[in-house]
Image: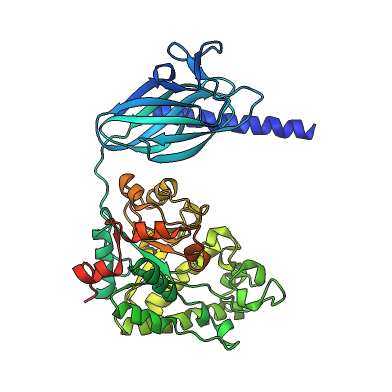
Length: 481
């Protein structure tokens, strides 16, 4: 009985979701809106039928039985741009969810889920870049056994996009920080900065590809006082200064070892104290009790990082600073108690460093696309996302980019602050997905030959759309002076 009830609830939920999607589609205004009937398309291994009622036109296409069965629509659009594609389809009642592969103009393949729909209904399968004139849109069976009625292609109205703000949230920011921000904004629509976590890893890229990244990521982790007390030392600040002197751009994250209450047992070692599983430190309690030892330890740790930021400021190094990264995942202690404590802690870090220590060389980077986690426009210069799809998945991350631009109403820069596979620069350019920079993570994500093949790394670093260190130096397109 409970199982049947769960099935009913799931079915009702799915129906509501599909109904909402259909309602949104009907009420969205498009500049271009055309239907292309399946029976008029080029068919391979499939056939036209009309046994199932409620179809559009003169029939629908069925018998997607083999993995390479396909249907090709010839679609003419009035201009180059991003278009929404909807599919009207049905799936036999007993078959459940299926998948189709969408190939646009022979170059971009995307796997799409088709939820089980017993009657013909229309859903959106995403946004695609189409060129003016004729385009080919191919649906490949993949996991078939569905019926295709038509596709609908919808072009968005051309709008003047809001101007990205190049003013930093800290009005007293150094000239170096202001200049870096202006540079980032100036290339936002035309280039992406290459980036790599770790200076040694950047050197590995140079050895194997012949290019160095424009951005190198460093980490304040070993300046956390619970690590310092155990004898850990770091020269990340000095390495970052050297990188800046070489002409590169500096980014810092902070794997913040919890100030206290480290579990320190197998699988939960003190050295993993930035992870929720390795500490019982309660950020919610600490922030709720500003006279407690826990709160004071937070301040001492922030002050320790402020010392390093001050050294960087004195060396005229602007810093892309990304504290409390991946908070919404919950795997780090600063996000373990939900969005409110994480946002409060981020604002505390900002206030302590900016107003108490009067450090002004920072461009503040937030690392989540969720509205409930966003600490507020007056504390954030750039929003970002950490991307780890399957090895070799070089898609442009259109959906996540759209979430971030929506979060800030397209008025702040959006960055790929960590990544496994590097998105294909050609697709980024084609789909106008304007990540400010990418920053490939270290070790296997760079060197295993699968996450990023050596061929792909070479293609990326030699792409005209990608800015590498030599371009920063040769063309002097960025200078902190």
